[in-house]
Amino acid sequence: MSVNSQQALFEYALRLGDNALILGHRLSEWTANGPILEEDIALTNIALDLVGQSRMLLSYAGEIEGKGRTEDDLAYYRQSAEFRNALLTETDNGDFAQTIARQLFYSVFADQLLQGLQKSTDATFAGYAAKAIKENAYHLRHAAEWTLRLGDGTDESKRRMQEGVDKLWMFTGDLFATTEADMQLVSAGIVPDVSTFREAWLKRVSDVLTEATLTVPESNWFQSGSRNGIHTEALSYLLGEMQSLARAYPGANW
Amino acid sequence: MENTVQLEEQFNAKLDKGEFIEPKDWMPEKYRKTLIRQISQHAHSEIIGMQPEGNWITRAPSLRRKAVLLAKVQDEAGHGLYLYSAAETMGISRDELLDQLHTGKAKYSSIFNYQTLTWADMGAVGWLVDGAAIINQVMLQRTSYGPYSRAMVRICKEESFHQRQGYEIMCALAAGTPEQKAMAQDALNRWWWPTLMMFGPKDSESKNSTDSIRWKIKRETNDELRQKFIDRTVAQAEHLGLVIPDPELKWNEERGHYDSGEINWEEFWNVVEGRGPCNHIRLKVRVAAHENGAWVREAANAYAAKKAKREAGSLVA
Ligand SMILES: [Fe+2]
Ligand SMILES: [Fe+2]
Image 1 (tube, rainbow over the protein chains, first blue to last red):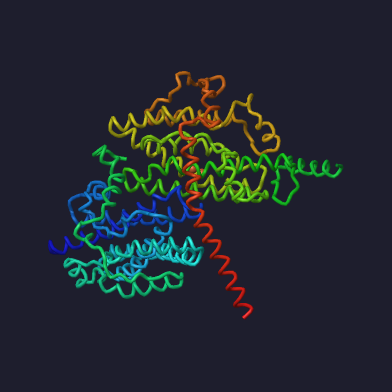
Image 2 (cartoon, rainbow over the protein chains, first blue to last red):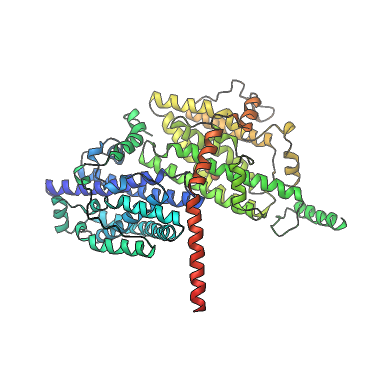
């Protein structure tokens, strides 16, 4: 592997691992705060799947990099600008509707991505995708079902669900951001070209929103930047909390 | 009247034979009341108990610990569900039970009114609090009410993992840097006595205990269970190289048990009566989650009703 493609693969593994870690972390904030006990269990379950995925991916990123960094070194000792997660994953939970909107947007994208990754020429990515696609199918079903319930529930739930969709819409474009380095991986058959996913993503998301009697936002203005480490303000707070204990005792084993 | 006497005889005969009482069986009103109180308190404890540990999920110092703690707290929510279902077999709804919790009418285990101040508290809670809960729950697997017993069998399978993960956290801290070891000792200092209080008042002072034993809801007394816990925990603390904060703790050859110092019962009763460090915050968080979730539950009901109506409509058509 050339130095360039090694760097590209490292960045991509970080992207995947950070998406799972940051979204999993956000969902874990719901623990003990859910609207109903069944949802405490469901959201914690999804968080657990994602944190599990992040461990596998960040360990792999460390291996690719070859500098001896572990999953924990990568999770706890990088600055926000070094994180590669999509902007959508770091957005705050908002109310339950906003959390569901985020999960719907992300899980549809993840389903597309994982289908492509299953065919990866990279055995670790393919193995990861085979496992994660099953987990994600549940996350997607959970989010789609709640979108229907909230969209087609009461006036209040409809208003909240629509607000969640509208508020997060501008962060969805960043999911499909593709770098030049990614295109090398695409040519080598290691990753799918996510920039081609947009239309199908829009179709699937629109179908769910329409069935839920919600309006698909029309705006074509999207925030971007995560691939270059430019995040929203929310990420530094999240990391401040997540990394605080590990950083207070550098070198300690837990 | 005659009839009740007969029914009570049958009920007692069942207990004597060691058979389970099932939801459809006749039971004395006081048995039913005692069980509803006990099972719902137990269920409430599971869900309030998510808070002190939930506190540290977002700050867990490694991804492995984060995943394990998430899994553990998720289990506790599941235990809450099993137990609410068991209570519902006695003809009371989860909504009613939650209402009793939220209005302060129902109690939950006082242990969750203590703070989790450091990461080591995740170790101490798993090791000691889940450890104490296991002793109680293992006994309750043989409780006389069938649905409660079966819920306990499921719960006990998961509890040993809870205790193990807590003890593992303590092992890592005890073998860690001097700061980590001090953190572990501090957590043991703060959690030891409140954990002993989990078994309830002394047998000589416990008003509910005698009925519960007679009805085989409980099989062992508070003091017996507490002794069992102390006896099995001392060696674990020694293995960790930590000191249990009780200068009177001493092996008694004659009794074949450890002797221990007196529990601060004044503290116990004050916390039970609402004057523990976290009584207010635990209830506030719980009520807030419930109230903030009201519109979600309403939406789910409204959607289900619409869907049922549509399906009924399409049947007619
Ligand atoms: Fe439990
Ligand atoms: Fe437990």
